[in-house]
Amino acid sequence: MNAGAPYPELPDERTRWILSDRPPRSPADPRQPGAFFLEQERAENGEVVSVATILLTNRECPWHCLMCDLWKHTLMETVPVGAIPMQIDYALEQLTRATFPTRVTDTFSGAEGVAQVSNLPYRRLPVGRPSESSRACGLEIRDTAGWKPALPASPPRTRNKPGDFSVLKLYNAGSFFDPRAIPLEDHPAIAARAAAFERVIVECHPALVGERVLRFQELLRNGAQATRLEIAMGLETVHPEVLPRLNKRMTLDQFTQAAAFLRAHDMAVRAFILVKPPFLDDAEALLWANRSVDFAFDCGAGVACLIPVRAGNGALEALARRGEFSPPRLATLEAALDYGIQLRRGRVFADTWNLEEFSDCPACFPARAARLKEMNLRQRPLPRVRCCACGGTQ
Ligand code: SF4
Ligand SMILES: [Zn+2]
Image (cartoon, rainbow, N blue to C red):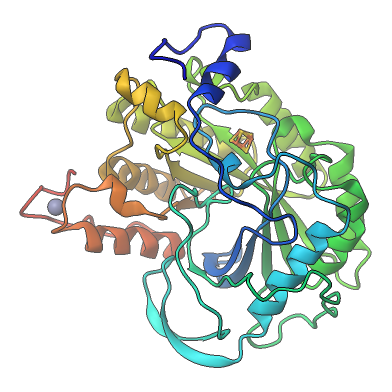
């Protein structure tokens, strides 16, 4: 326990402070993905495409950011070679085995409809799991109970078949190009599986963007039709004092250079931006979220994902007790999305997972959540929800 001690000013002391108040880690199995689900997302060309998102189980990220709780679903050790491709096979097998129509509510778009889903149980992501940067929303289909680790490799699938997913997100609660998280020996097998998709999105700390990314891109290009590689990086915030205090050990120059490197090599860039990191009030948070969106697009990002900061990792609760953190109001996230979308410089998505924790007004929450989800898909501003109870400000 940090016993109520203030958050250290010295970088070397911050990691110990952050780790000291951690709640227990969730059980994780190297043979099983943490979760996998379908979601819809607005693509570059304006179409709404189906995305197969797989949250891979692997070793914990070596950075220990102040706001991160992705470690809860990670392992202490590197997974064996072959485990990650097996996790992908398992998830894709289940997602493509979708055999019968059923009525579902897409938690991303809010739309109800008939979808082809498998006969497996589905549920929301575990509480505390952010949805972007493994940070997803949507219908989760998860069944690991009956899984045999020795599943055969999925056969290459023809693209654009009805019901196919055109985009694959492989989020690993860290950096895809961290060899202690995803063994390098597995890259060819992963690329072979990703080659069935038009685009694959992986996440990475800017410090690990380099030659390994190019080699993985080369593997993707070996397929009959090159799969576009998109790298998602946490920009977090451009606030000059808050960014260093997040313990991410990343500078804005580093982010700029990593983005330039990726763009120069024909890769797409996605930026994760925090809405209301610690040490800011809601007004400051909106200002800096907007500036961060501007910065992401200046760096050539095609997508900016707005992540409302959620408590749950122990460190944020410790800061909250000191009055240095509170989650954003829903209105702050709404305003940041309004700002980003009206720029028309790229796509801007609000992370809508567990959105209810940011609202105090049950009267208007459903309509406001639906509006955000709709704006994510349409990428145009929609009228604000009026509320007699709260005035739409909660
Ligand atoms: S770099 Fe990303 S995954 Fe790693 S600790 Fe920071 S926020 Fe978490
Ligand atoms: Zn209200």
